[in-house]
Length: 334
Figure (cartoon, rainbow, N blue to C red):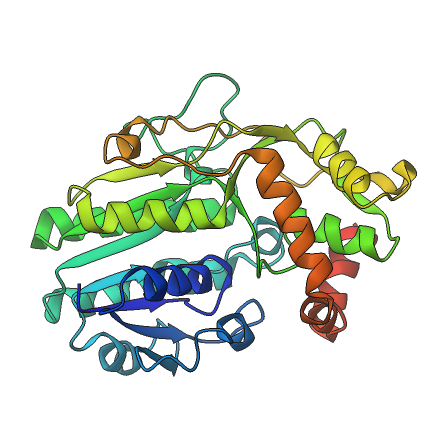
């Protein structure tokens, strides 16, 4: 692909994907469209900003003219742009519908008009809802249980309708809990790491028994790239691992790695409608030749070390009034 548009390319997974694409494909031009809302950070692209193959546009996926400008002339679109935190969706669901559904509608319409050759919608395993046993396969019903997951499921259905109705070559990936460099520190692992580094309590929901399967961001990027290039249009692909870890155990491991006292782990009231388990059957993406390269210990230690080595990056975020306000509402006022 000579040119691709990466929306949300200054966010966590998006910026890592931009870096991955530029490094792997020396002839590919990458256009990034990002609104630079609270979790979008231009510094996430610092090591790529001088590339003559990267073009950055600050803009909103809900704005048709900005989307048209960014998409014109590209062959592929990878949409990472989204409000993405479950806790924030519980506090303010409307913004999730606006970006995650209405914004996707604008992107799909532009892709249809401009005859884009591949459109990949980055989704989440949370569209399946709570999975008490077994593994979720791509043909299973979608059963989202919070506004974030519902907005992502709705966007998937809309994207699928563009494939069926208009023949737009849509692909969907449903990723597991992703960790790694540049993840905004409200998410569970960077929250635990940065709190531990400052000797602050690590807030664990409920009794800490909820489990997640963790996926390293580089593995996630390689899977998205594989689906973009080799996936079957109209299909969804689960992307994950079998690294199931409870919130309680994750906090303990972080404290152990950083040599912090175990009593920093603190149980807090559970979130509303908390899904206690997600688990993915990844046979479909594996049939394309993809396998994760990082085991849990490697991804955990590597992520912890990145936050140790990049303290100015996350300290600036944590000192912002918006972050402090969110943290107070989420963990103190509740």
